[in-house]
Image (cartoon, helix red, strand yellow):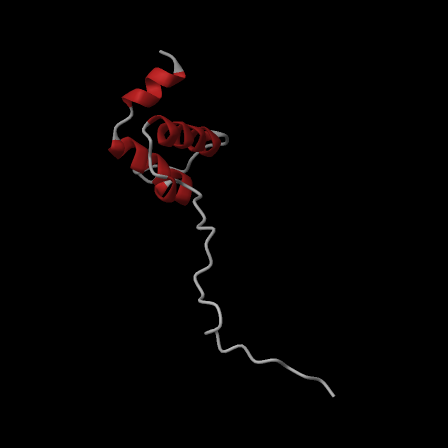
Length: 82
């Protein structure tokens, strides 16, 4: 079985379990991930997201690049030192 075949066979539940394992450092049964498993899980997550066309704003590590503050209405005051 190739990596692509493996990723195609992952269910959304397995994908969510992998994301949770990476976030917590533990498998769903509470066992701690061993050395290297977090990296392998993260690689599988990234491949899954690319293969299954997960929207960018729902992907692991997404950071919204837009500024949430409105311009001119931020109550900024200029400090003048004398």
